[in-house]
Image 1 (cartoon, rainbow, N blue to C red):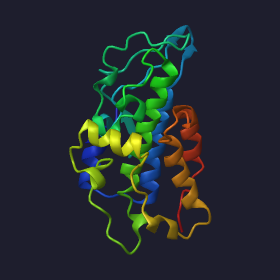
Image 2 (image 1 turned 180 degrees about the horizontal axis):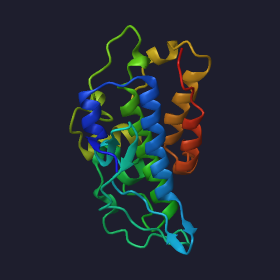
Image 3 (image 1 turned 30 degrees about the vertical axis):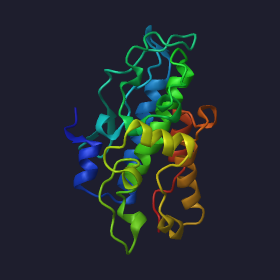
Image 4 (image 1 turned 45 degrees about the vertical axis):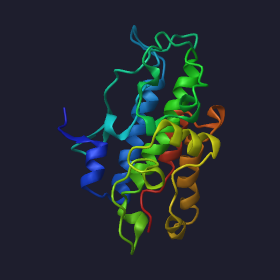
Length: 226
């Protein structure tokens, strides 16, 4: 087993990464999430779909080879084959700033596996933004911002539930994607990355990407920017 460098949150607070490193981190964390979300049966062994109830940069580990692994499944309900949740007792115990709008508002159907999985995809979009904000190749000739949690620039380090409901649900605002990213000289790359983020954190859970679709979108990103 490869040694672990700590959580993605700690990694991003201590280091910046280049584009290749950022893409590898993004692809492997999304692949882990897609595997978690998939109902599998192989060689007589069954793995049900699982929704990570607290998906955040604190619950993603960075391996020595620059890949990611998910951790901390204490809030993760197992989903039944009929798409229902087998145990929703800890669903709303996730990290506040990563919660999907329907969870923040208390409107989520906690008996629906689809709803729970799509709430995690919203969180994925925020973690991807958090990661890309520490990519030095996305800030050519400009300083890379200090590591920030989602909504920290707009609402501070510890926003309240009311702050988030107002900003995320009522105003339907999301973390700011820097205008500087639009100046990257690589054809349509900018739109591809922006669309991945925006399609993960769409206010409509049914309009969001699935985790497996996010894997495919991230795999289509170029390996080099220049």
